[in-house]
Length: 335
Ligand SMILES: NC(=O)c1ccc[n+]([C@@H]2O[C@H](COP(=O)([O-])OP(=O)(O)OC[C@H]3O[C@@H](n4cnc5c(N)ncnc54)[C@H](O)[C@@H]3O)[C@@H](O)[C@H]2O)c1
Image 1 (spheres, rainbow, N blue to C red):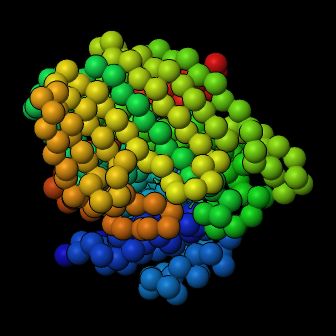
Image 2: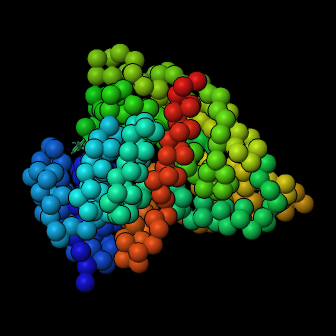
Image 3: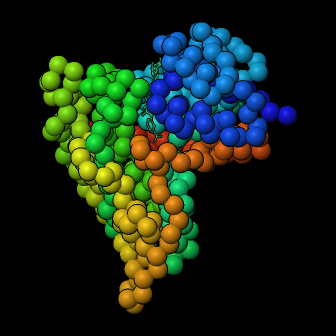
């Protein structure tokens, strides 16, 4: 027998990922959509089937709803996710968990108090190329990781978010808080922590609003670019760049330099993982394209979330791990 799920926030991430992936999951009977802009929840209920909750309280008090996705904008996560947990729902929260580490820690307190599961949508971990890279690192097939280089950039969120304009909340300090750092950067920080089984503890960074303008034509209040040099607890060194001004194809690439060779991930569209060994041999893995704004494939995140509820397992991306990544983003912005 299945159960119902609720979604808070009915914008782009709900439309392209959460709603279709819940619909495809055999344990989910019905989706109940809530957005403070009711036209958006009505539109998605029509598109995917399902019901609309007119008020957040209706969603939270509905006993048929076992789990909730919090897909509201960043500044609302700590309110919505906390309320959902304390209402007895399991929560899949979009990244970043909160706009500050302090708020994120309060969410963890609510998780502990509720006894419910909290998972974060750090979907990069779930792609085939990243999974394969993790396996190679864990098995020490290329020896120890020494250094890394990662980037994530595209042309910016104004063409992605549901408002489709420069008035987007992604550009507002009081709503996004961290600009491209918390939007794209946090994905790669989480990925590096996950792949290397390590944690970034030292940060040197530059960030700036180089090109994006708001609806009045003024420079945006948050950063549209970050370049950073990073050091991990285990002493690995790396660089990371995040951008909303890569005005060509999206760049989602990572390179991991190990004692016995190099791993190139998402550099080549035909071979998503390339291993160049120290002895000169090269292995090319054809795995899959990563999800991009223009190419939405299943992330596997919803299935993993439902699976940890159904089988009472620890979520594969925890609140504590989300805080570790958020802390790095705070340090980047403090530079
Ligand atoms: N995991 C990923 O790869 C990924 C990708 C894109 C966005 N996101 C995250 O998903 C979240 C939503 O982003 P989006 O791209 O869908 O934005 P969006 O602007 O397209 O949609 C956000 C929706 O949330 C609604 N909303 C905002 N605050 C609310 C509140 N307090 N109560 C009810 N509804 C509220 C808005 O009305 C809007 O419809 C953000 O936190 C973003 O960082 C994650």
